[in-house]
Length: 290
Length: 328
Image (cartoon, rainbow over all chains, first blue to last red; front, side, top):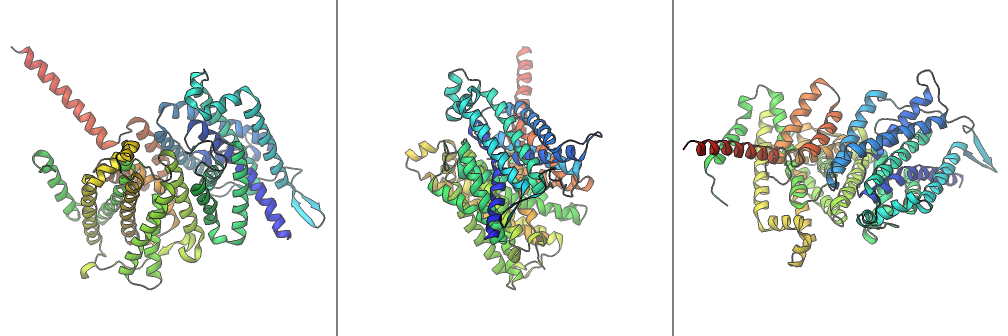
């Protein structure tokens, strides 16, 4: 029973990380209609940047949380540059845009391998959260609970942004009907850059927040990207709620799968995706069929 | 089909003669091996091109299918069965997996198709990597020896090259016939005007499904050739990079052309072999070539060069025309 509870906490933690990763993926997909195949790379890049900042750079050792924010901002700027100078060159050609994101992801992976080497980089759990929280006979790692809290806070902030602000209304309009949004005077191409940067920053933030749990290693990008894909296929593209629920489901299936069917853990992820594809191609909360 | 005459026929004859004599004019075994690699990757690229070029369906999970065929060969051999059983199982399993791929991914076209095939490819990779009791995990499966078709040994590099060449020529002929058949024409119809094809009474899904199966068969064949060539299969051959490499072959050479994928395969294999002799950073270069080709020459090298050639020809012609007019 204790094992299951611990597994459940781990699953929710992992689900929270997946949500941070896939919320941006889903928004970019919803708005620009392309799966951003650099998303795993942005996650990894954020984790490496964060690890370097925490480890100390230019004789300054950054606090974990400041490092996380700086890494997220750097990667958000990188995302904005990709959108502005590469994807913008190929308007109305989603296939070419996808291929460009794929090409960039290879380049990022190789540059990271060059810069940080092949060994996993460990990131220490931030001070004050390294301990455990006792609840009756149960023991929970404090940091994992903190990650859940962060994910919930980000989810609420994103929901407020999308549901309560003018920018959010414009993004929603762009997701639902980009052509009509343009007609009523929304500069959808500007939204592309904003959403791409936001998604990149969130992915990088997830990367560094997840680093104390997952550590950072070459191939992390290729581990995370399919998970984001599965979450979005499951939850539906362009939907925040879809990413949230999808992330939780995948978090549970991934963790329980690894504990119970270690050889087939990757395969069991496939089952809910298969069911959704057959029964509800637009995803659980999707607004359109990709 | 028009009879082959003129310079085009000459090009074919020269190309065939060059291919048939590779072991005699290549400077060493290493280069003969590179040529074999080009040929089985060309079969792989031809198979993917059936989908990417003629059906308009971009798959990013094809390395998974190649991997399934290669692993099946390795596993059956490891279990003590003969080569014919291994090859047969590999082809059958490749086709069955392709059918599963097709049923799931043909629910969508365009970007949706890419996403689903990518997810499927990653799942196959995950299986190869984690299902250690079958696949050997990261250590992969080692093969011992090659089959002896019609009693002939294909252990030497040049013999294996000729075996690959025969399969390659058959595959090329099959793709040519397929593309020019009514089914091929219908497939291109579903690529360009799916709704009209549907209205005309064509079964769009069925046409796409059979195109997938044809592509899957070619992919499985190249998987068998691949695993007998390397004598080893590991999850690395199944990952997203491999799927992207073969897609790069198709796109760089020219999707939807017969010879584009072959040129693309030659380009990618040669660059990879040459570059990896000097630096380890193949992925960086792969990504850069990818981005450059997509942005600068999106139609691929073969149509792109043909376009430039025509343009230059026309300009030269115009200049001659101007001179001719100026004379009298």
